[in-house]
Image (cartoon, rainbow, N blue to C red; front, side, top):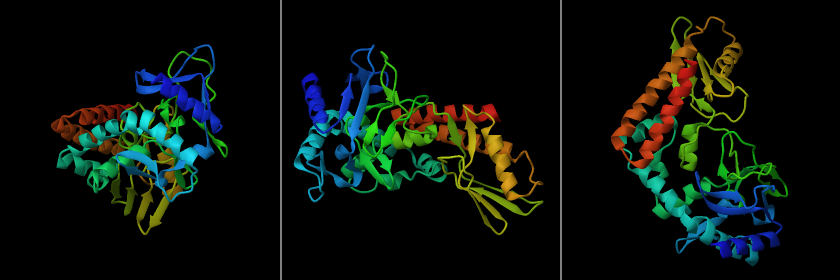
Amino acid sequence: MDDNWDFLLSEFRKFGGIADNVCQKDGEYGRGIFPVNPILRSRIFTPSKLMIKKNDIYIEDNKLRIKKDKEYNQEVRHFFNFYQDNFSWGSGGKEKTELFEKGLNLFNSNLKELIKKYALVDLEKRHKGIWDNVIKTQFLNARAIKIGKTYFIAPVWDLVNHKVRSLPFILNKEGISTPNHPASNTEIRHSYGNISPLNRFFSYGFFSEESIVFSFPFSIYIEDLGIHILCKGMSLNNDSIQIERSGNKIILEGLPIADVNHTRLPYDYFDEVLKKIGNSNIPKDIILKIFQYNISIRKKIIYESHLTDNEVSMILTKLIDYEVSLISSHN
């Protein structure tokens, strides 16, 4: 493995890649990237010329390869093949992804239906088609970085694990880099972005104590005012409040219902929604009913998850418990 790692980094640097003071080994969060010398800074930079469009990758003889009709030179193809075979897909990545997806596939029908209705993840649709392609899709989705409207795989950089409270990666037209961390003797990690624990689970296959939770879809009818408030249950990537109005219906894209870093956010956000609606007569305790509703649905998921009783359902139970605790702290 050390020889392969040294060869990988040697080839990586020929393309303009930077891999300063780094090695790959197993740690608390699985296989990750660690400093070789704790008193020196560590950095990984993957140049744009090595970043492969996700849709240009296919499976050939159970290996990830770049489609033959795509315009990549032979040197890039050889590098990508060696990297995937020895450090990513072919070095436990495929097996780990498949174990997770098989665990999801074993969920009982009630749990799958709850997940489809409230978490907006259709597991039947996700697992439809040739199984190897299902695994490939989920493997690449968990590692891809979006630039504009296109998703790319960034070799070597994508070996770095996620940490909630950490610096984000650095992206520019030259390529993608790990943050400018100070020297450390601990695993090098960065933030993959700000999403809920449930979304992190279905997108990446693990549980982490993310800082924010979003509401499940809901519909509340305020009889005295003849108003329907509906929430689509989407995650929000920024602070902008998106509201649609259709007759007596007020439709929200999403609604934050817990935030570790900003405990007032759910209340303040909902207050802003009410201001935009322009109706001061809407009861202020509706937000509390939304909290209670979300907790009750999550408890149903926990119940069904216990009935499934496999390793993946145990992770789901743990993260839903965590989400309930965050929502309850605001309730």
